Image 1 (spheres, helix red, strand yellow):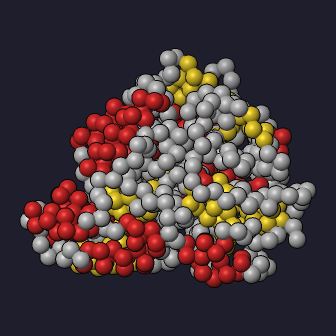
Image 2 (cartoon, one colour):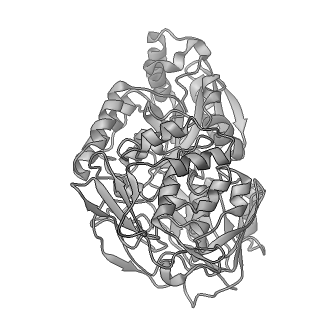
Image 3 (cartoon, one colour):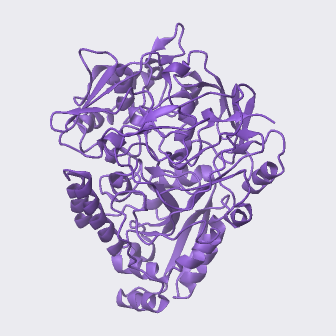
Amino acid sequence: MAAVAMIAVGCSSSGTKTGNGSTTSSPGSGGSTSTTLCANCAPVTGLQISNPNSGGTPVTGGTLTVLGTSDVDNNLDPNIGYYTLDYLASLLYNRPLYAYPSVTGQTFNAVPDLATAAPAISNNGTLYSVTIRTGAMWNTTPPRQVNAADVVRGVKRSCNPATPFGGQPDFSGVLMGYTDFCTGFSKVSATSASAQAAYINGHDISGVTVDPTNPLTVQFHLTKAASFFTGVLNLPPFNPAPVELLSYLPNSTALATHQPSDGPYMIKSYNPNTSIVFSRNPAWNASADPVDKAYVNEIDVSETGNQAGIVSQILTNTPQADMLWDIGVPPTQIPGLLHDPRLQLQTEGATNPYIIFNTVSKNNGGAMAKAQVRQALSYAINRTELIQNHGGSQVDPPLTHLIAPGTDGSGPNFDDYPYDPNKAKQMLQQAGVTNLTLTMLYRNQSSTGPKDFQTLQANLAAIGVTLKGLTASNADFYGKYLIPGTAAKNSQFDLAEAGWGPDWYPTGGPSYFLPILSTTSFPPSGSNYGFFGDPTLDNLMNQAVAAPDPASAAAAWHQADQEAMAQAAVYPIADPNGSSLHGARVHNCVYVGPYQNCNLANIWVAG
C-alpha cells in the first residue's frame, strides 16, 4: 500500500481474499449491512480502543471542522494518489469499487462500495468481472450514471506521463496489456492535456474492457491467476474517472476544482496546502451507497496548523476544532488519554516507521550499496529507544521484520539484528569502511521525527559514525525528496525514515515488496526510494505472485521477508497503533486502520 499518513506516503487500500463473506452490521455505523470480501477474514490484532461516541439518534446537518498540517499528495486526483490522506479525501467525492466500512471490528475487511458484489471470477482465475450499482451518479448536468467505461478510463489515467500512480507494481505484472499501454503513454507529452486525452481515447488496455452485454460491468483479464487480485481492486487506478477529467492535466489544481463527483460530497473549494471544503453532493443517492451516510452538510479541512496546537484545541473542545486530518496524537500524550472517550486507537497493521537505506548514494565511496554496511548499521540501532520516542511498546509495538501482523506471511516472528554495537563496529571494520558521515532526511514537523534523528545520531556515534540531519516539511518529504528519486541519486541523503502499509488485507504481501523493494519500482513511477536491488529477492517475489493460493503465497512472502532482512534492505521499527482524536460533539467516529482516520462521511455532529 502505500505510504502512510502519520509517518509516510504509500498506501493502505483495499481488499482481502476472494470469497463470499458473512454479512455484518452495526447500529449507527457508516455502512449499514455490507458483505465482506473474504470468507475467513483473520482479525488484525493489537491494542484497540474504540470510542466512536455512536450513542443516540444520528443528526443530519452542520459542519465538521477537520484540522491538520499538510495537504494531499496529488491535488485530489482520484487515480494517482498513493497516500492514505489521498484515500481518505477521495472517499468523499470519488467512490472506490470496494471500501473499508465504518463498522467496529470489521474495519480491515473490505466491502463492495460502487460494486454490487465481490468480483465474479472465471476462466481459471484469470477473468474478474465487477458490476457497478445502478443509481451511482456523477453530479453532471443532468446527472449521469457511473459506468464501466469510467473505470476503464481511470485505469488508463493511472500511468499518465505527468504523475503516474506509484503502486503500479502491485498489479502491472498480471493485468493483461497494462504495461504495453503504459509504455506507449510514457512517450506522450507530460504537459499537454489534449495529447494525453488523445492517447487515452485512441488506445486500449487489452485486459480492461467493458462487458459487451452490460455497460455497467467492467472486466479485468489477467495474464495468470493471481490470488490477491481482489484486494488490488480497491486501489485508486480502479476508481472511475469521468470523461471531464481528460480536459485537465493529472495532478493539477484545475482538475481538482472542476471534477464531477459520484460520492456523498463534492469539492466546493481547494487551496493547495491551505484548505479543502467539501459540500453535500445533491446527485448522490443514499440507496445506491451502502458505505456512506453523509450526515453533515459540509466538511471544512484546514491544513495550516501544527500538531501540538491542534491537539490542544481538540482536548479543550474549542469550537471549530472537531477532529484531526493528517496527524495523530503525540505518542507521549497517548498513555494519559487511554480512558478518554475522545480517543480512537487501533493497530495500523503497517511497517511505520522504517528506515530507508539509500543504496545509490555516492557518499563515503558508495558504502550504502554494501550489504555488510547496512547490516552493521542495523545492529547499531537501538529499536527500544526509538519505540520510547513513540510512546512505548503499548502504543507502538516493535516490529523486527518487514511484514506486519495482519498480512499473510508475517509470521513466525524473527529478528536478524538485535541491538549489538560491538558487532556493528566489527562488521564495519570487516567491510573496510571507516569515518562514515551519513545524512538523514526526516520531517521536522513531526513530533517523533526530530527525536528519532537524535536517537539515531547517538546510536551511530557509539560505533564511530557521524549522522547529520536534512529536514523537510511534511509536504516536501515525499513530493520533493523521495518520490522524484533525484534527491537519492544526487546523494542528498543516506538514510530516511518513512512508513508503509499494505494496500489491502490480508493478502497484501505483494504491496509490501513490489512497490518498495522491487527493481521494477524505482522512483518516480515506484516507491523503492532507496533504489534497493537484490536478484534473489526479485525471484522470490515472482514466485510469491505466481503462488496458486493464499496459503502458498503467504509462505513465499515470508521467505521474501527473510531475504529482505538478510540483505538489510530496510530497518523496520514498529507496527504502530494509529490514533485519532475528536471533540465532544463528534459522533460515530469509527477509526478505520487502512485510512488512518475515521471516514468523514459517516460522522455526525451534535452538542
